Image (tube, rainbow, N blue to C red):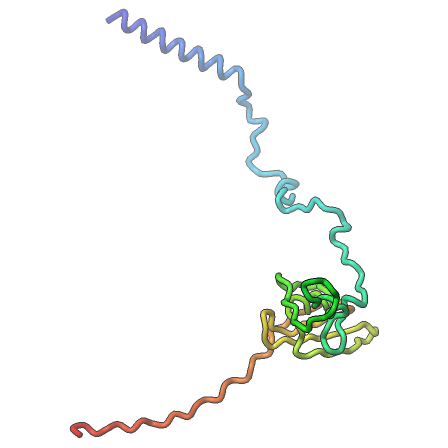
Length: 181
């Protein structure tokens, strides 16, 4: 029994010595502990929310005559896009399918027409500064709505006017047959 007691005491001593040596090799001070984060780390954007591109990536290209619709709501060069498959350049008269994708603010007039198709109603005006104002109205189609442009760029999008309610059918009361006949 004494021998088992000595072995046990020796093991406890070795474990205690190992813990003491391990504790001396690490910094157990409270110098590096921060309970409250620093303000610059709280207000900083996370890395995933930053943009690594340049300022030129945010600049819009200038509006040209090819970006503006005419009185019929068509873009210049619409006939060139509807050429036949052999590329001969003769218009086929076929309707060009709308471009895929959504519609966003700052798009040009023709970008919207390419996505939503020909407008049902086109209104032209000029504001107090003489800037071009165009309103394209789509009651049906993939992107119904009222699109307002200023200077050739999409400035606002409104919900399309609701179609008039369908006339209610007059229902005649159904005459019930008397029971027992």
